[in-house]
Length: 273
Ligand SMILES: Nc1ncnc2c1ncn2[C@@H]1O[C@H](COP(=O)(O)OP(=O)(O)OP(=O)(O)O)[C@@H](O)[C@H]1O
Ligand SMILES: [Mg+2]
Image (tube, rainbow, N blue to C red; front, side, top):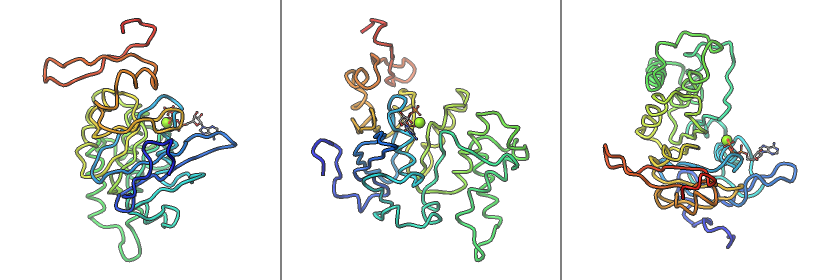
């Protein structure tokens, strides 16, 4: 336990779906993530927010097992990720990276079909069930009409939707999404975030748009590699937090259409505090 970390390991990590236990990650002496502990609750939509360089992508890569922590560990169903086979991890957990790569020689459908790989074996070869899952995943992100297109011909937003479809086709219990809407037009942003939140899976999503983050069940706030707040969005995004971590002033407004609360954000120098 580290008394300086208010979100220290709670002792119930063994029961959790996914937990970070005192995670630290350093590269060439630079501490990118510092003693982050976090229990991800089954079924929740957890948002990860923080300024550029605060460690959001690093945390997601550690949770996905793409990077190995310098200290601490990630537990999946109570077992250290480092002791699990990649295939078993992939049956449980799918990730859409911020800069996801896919071979250019594939069609969109072939790229999405890769999501079924962890489920296929000599005893369980490709079947109509897999085809239906892939079709549904493409429909979920409105990609059906592009299914035969060559990957290299897609726009940035279309590629991003195809990466999300590939992750959905993996049928994970946990979906880790690193800025899943950063290339999408506003309609696709709203549709995909709503779709992701309606899925019967646990999600961990790194986001920059704090108003979109309000739709998450809980928010984790990273600042210079540390977890500085964790809780309900309205409890976490206090004026003081917005100022100290994000360097902005924020005021709550009420949407006259549905009464929802929204953040109006300004740079500190705008002087509208
Ligand atoms: N290989 C590396 N060597 C040194 N520093 C690195 C390396 N990889 C990442 N960093 C630094 O680690 C910090 C955290 O990076 P990370 O990508 O996790 O931030 P982020 O919160 O996802 O930022 P963004 O909002 O820009 O996506 C950044 O300052 C980044 O420059
Ligand atoms: Mg990032």
